[in-house]
Amino acid sequence: MRIIPIHASAGITGFESPASEYLQLSLSLDELLVEHPNATFIGIAKGDSMQGCGIFYDDLLIVDRYETARHGDVIVANFNGEFVCKILDKNRRMLLSSNEMYQPQVINDYDSFNIEGVVIRSIRCHRQSPLLVNQS
Image 1: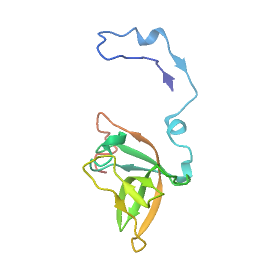
Image 2 (image 1 turned 180 degrees about the vertical axis):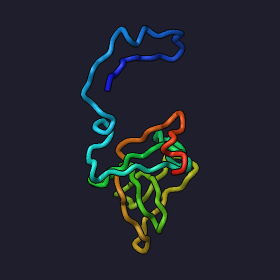
Image 3 (image 1 turned 60 degrees about the vertical axis):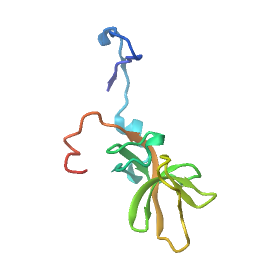
Image 4 (image 1 turned 90 degrees about the horizontal axis):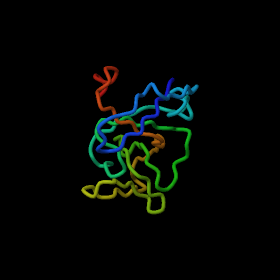
């Protein structure tokens, strides 16, 4: 993959020619974004409860099942039969949203709760990928 280092600041009107400098790196997006390929899946975010930490509707979530969830991690969990993306508060046994419009959710002993993985990356597609058209 060729990386063209264009550093764009808000308000500029032109770019230096991208061909003037480029780096040839032996790097793939898989290597950059996925740490444990056999334990990773991609989910699609729905809703607006995680906007405060930069996860928006239809963003791609790279979820790593190998990683152990720590306090403050963004996780995907199965909570009472529903897949949710939330911030894990291990100390208070709660699932937190990053949008003030949503209340924290206590994880009670009687709840069905299973962490599916830790969100290690999120990706925003500015044009819809034809591969994802029927997935949302």
